[in-house]
Image (cartoon, rainbow over all chains, first blue to last red):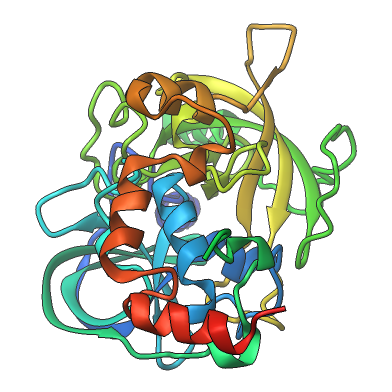
Amino acid sequence: MLKKFVLGAALAFAAAVPATASQGTQGEHVQITGEIIDTWCYFSGVMGGPDAVRGTAHHTCALWCAAGGIPVGILADDGTVYMVLKWKDTKNVADGTSLLSVQTHRVTADGMLYERDGIKYIMVDDVVNDEGIVLTNHEDFGFVPPFAQPKNK
Amino acid sequence: MKKLIMSLAAILVATPAIAGDVDYSANSQAKSWNLFGEEKARFTGKVTDAICGLTGDCPDDCGGGDRQMVVIREDDDRMFLANKNGQPIFSGAAYDLAKYCGQMVEVDGLLVGDSDITPGLESKLLQIQLIRPIEDKDFAKTNNFTKVWAKKYPEAKGKGPWFRRDPAIKAQIEKTGYFGLGHEVDEKYLEENAE
């Protein structure tokens, strides 16, 4: 009886221990459609509410943040954000150049989904559709932040 | 049987404490940025890159600042995505963390995000303001981005903030404009909204 109890406790404990980095986690193949966003401005509110930090209004700021190595995400239609860790052939997505050309674009991406501690991560293998910039909101919000407006124009 | 019980006890002793009700803001020296859901947080953990933390693909240098980085908290093995360094200039934390790749550190900063406003995540993101290897006494500011950027782009040396001089940003704006829809759209808006 005691032996069964101890073995059961040991198994339950082992199942409850979180995976460590060296163990890795199992990914799942997914296809995600959504807008490429700057996750710092979106989640922090530093530049305003979530509607203002997407689309054309926020495009220049999104370029700045992506070039600064701030994590880029895909904002899916259901509101879920997938943090991008790989883009096609590169895992160097914080290098300041890899993701500039797709900022603010609405894309459909194939890749592997990983989830840990409340955050969804995607390693994009292929972009099966790139609709370009779809959300045009600069007439509503202007330049976000205002100092993104070009001078001498 | 006795050995089995002893082994189980040893495993339990060796396991990190569950975070539970730990107040990670208690000793924080982080400055407030007045952000959504902001909480100050100071904790110890291991630095690695996010892909390593998820898949076990772990280069020795964590990608040298080009991969996104995480801190895995010692207390509960919770992985925090490092979203921002301490500089208020559109800069991430990858360069600041990569130099501590594989090390145990103490970080001090902000956990950011409010799921009532932006429900896309079920966790907060980490902004790191201060960091120190656990064997060191003093914290360092996380302000390496501009130093690394300046070495990377010596031809972009000049006045004004880095993001107005960055060659890749300038090339992209030259190609598609400030709103990303082409220069005609920019010019039309600026004409209609001239002060």
